[in-house]
Image (cartoon, rainbow, N blue to C red; front, side, top):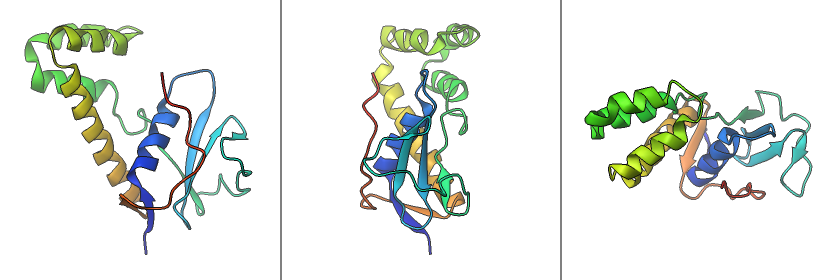
Length: 155
């Protein structure tokens, strides 16, 4: 029987794992309880210690990142192609250089599509995470186990 895990916990863990920075952020879902464990480097963000079998794929599954689910450049360009085709060449140019995402968001703000992008991205992330969970024997719910130790908000 699939183990329930809250979609909010998965999205938060996904954001944590996908965050750029100097730390090695990771999150794991227990295949037994559905609890999400957060870590950076070898340090737990929970008050409790990390399980010793955290790296065992039989007991815990690592939460994927934006890169793992191919939700970066491809998703952004797909959005522009669908919602602002006149800006596609400009967006494509942005993604050929570092710092693309900041320029991409400025472009969307200029053309009045930034909020639509956030909604589009949120739907795509939830859809991809639901598929990932299903592929890994987890059942996404709105009221699964509450996971303590959520990471600090991204800035």
